[in-house]
Image 1: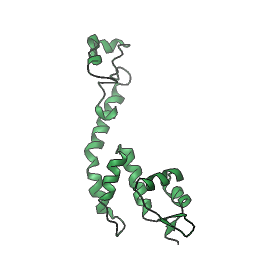
Image 2: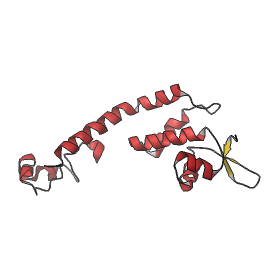
Image 3: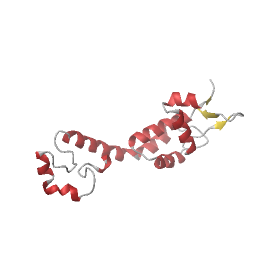
Image 4: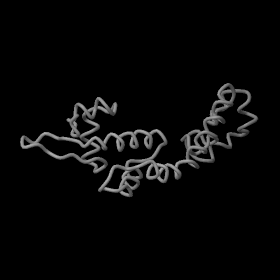
Length: 147
């Protein structure tokens, strides 16, 4: 088994498009070596970094936050479970906020979703005199994590 993967192989294994692989390499989130002909070759452990990137993006981390987190991982060895546990602990509060926001949204979808439109009779109760319009733009009653 070859420990070096081509762009196509790592894209297939990770589920990312080859263009995303090249983008993440350009951003410094993953690294590759080059063959004599200039083709990229990725160590197998880059699959773990790509899985981390996917999970972090699903949580809502920016590329900058992901890069900061990945910089804390060791360069001289494949990250282990303890490394990933340390990084993911910071996500717990963020995920809890997102879950709470999604539950609130789900529970209000059949009445008012906080948009301030006054189109439903219930909105006149939740948003009298269009008070939401003074609170900013967008769905001001939605939890901030869902904006």
